[in-house]
Length: 275
Ligand SMILES: Cc1cc2nc3c(=O)[nH]c(=O)nc-3n(C[C@H](O)[C@H](O)[C@H](O)COP(=O)(O)OP(=O)(O)OC[C@H]3O[C@@H](n4cnc5c(N)ncnc54)[C@H](O)[C@@H]3O)c2cc1C
Ligand code: FES
Image (spheres, rainbow, N blue to C red):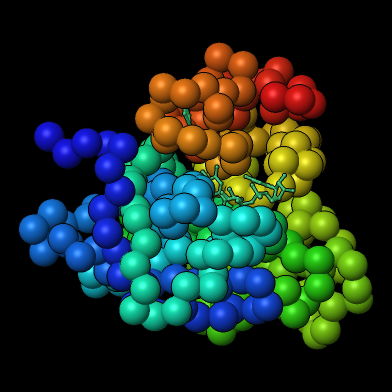
C-alpha cells in the first residue's frame, strides 16, 4: 500500500497566469502511467515544495493526464507554488476529502453559488453536468467577484451562458460592472434573478465563509431545504488524513469528512466564529 504521507513527484507542465497573483498549474505525475490518478469533483490535493511547505489546493479539473490547480498567491507556500516555472517538480498527495453530490443531484435543478476563487472547485463538476446534461434539470451558475476584471475564465462563462436550460449570472460588489451580463452587489443579490424549481433543486456553494452564511440565509428564505445545500469549507490543514486535528471544526475533520458538507451537519458550527 502507498504511504499516504509520501508525496508523489509531479512536473509543472504549464503555469498559466489567469490574473495577477492567480495562476493555473497543470501538473503531470511522473509515475502517472503506473499509478493513474482519479479524483471526484470537489476533492483536493496537498501540494508541497520541499523546504517551503505543503498546502491543500482543490483539483480544478483533469484534462487527459494533466491535473489542474488554480492557486492564489497569499502566503509563503502559495506564492512559491505560483512561481514554479514549467519543468520544475513539486510533491502531490491526494486526492483527499469528500466531493460534490453529483449522483444525488440527478433529476434536480442545480444551483452553483461561488465567490472569488470559490469558482475553481466547481469547474470540474459543472463540466461533468454539461457532459451528462440529460441527467440534470436546469443549470444555474452564480459567481461573485469584487471587480469585474477579477473574473477568471470569462470565455468559459460566456460559453456556458449559450447552453440550453442554463443561466449564468455575474455580480461585482465593489464597482458598477460593465454591461447587461453583470449585476452590482454581492453574489447573493443574483438569487433574486435566478430561475429554478425550489422544490427540486440542489445548491452547491463555495467561497469565503461570510458569503456562505449570507447565501444560506437567502436560500432558506426562498424555502430551499437545508439538506439540499452543500458547502465547501476551508481550514488550515497538515496531514489531510484525519489524524492531526488542525482542520477540526467542532466534531468535524474537514480534511476527511469535508471539505464538502451537507448544510445540516454545519448548523451551529459555521456561524460560530473561532471554529
Ligand atoms: C480544502 C481546501 C481547498 C483549497 N483550495 C484552494 C484552491 O483551489 N486555490 C487556492 O488558491 N487556495 C485554496 N485553498 C486555500 C489554500 O490552502 C491557502 O491559501 C494556503 O494554505 C495558504 O498557505 P500559504 O503558506 O501560502 O499562506 P500562509 O502564509 O499560511 O497564509 C497567508 C495568509 O492567508 C491566510 N490563509 C491561510 N490559509 C487560508 C485559507 N485556507 N483560507 C483563507 N485564508 C487563508 C492566512 O491567514 C494569512 O493571512 C484551499 C484550502 C482548503 C482547506
Ligand atoms: S488536516 Fe490533519 S486532521 Fe485534518
